Image (cartoon, rainbow, N blue to C red; front, side, top):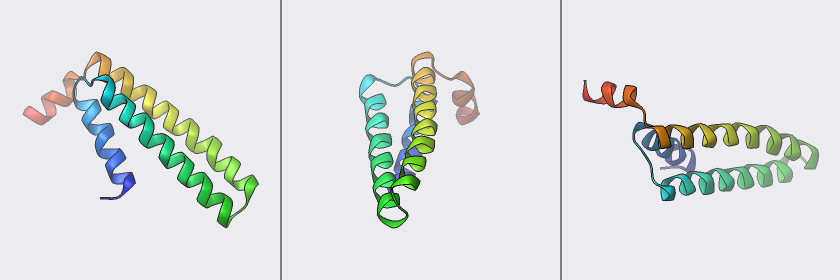
Amino acid sequence: MGPIEWLEEEFVDVSSSRADLREILELVLGSILLLVAATGLTAVFLGRTEALVVTGVLGAVLAITVLSQAYWAITGREDYRDERDG
């Protein structure tokens, strides 16, 4: 399983039930590692300016995603449980 599939699976797991702090921290750490890897590879292959753009865009997307997952982990998602049970 690649890092993107792992990260996606973790986001779904956290969304589908109440998560504890450890799971949220795993999501944050995975997002940071993905951001660092993407930035580094972009800097090597395309240059520093492009790497800064990738960092900004991907950082914003991951920040919004992690905040959303943290919110749903705290409040819970009844609609996810209904779809899985039904």
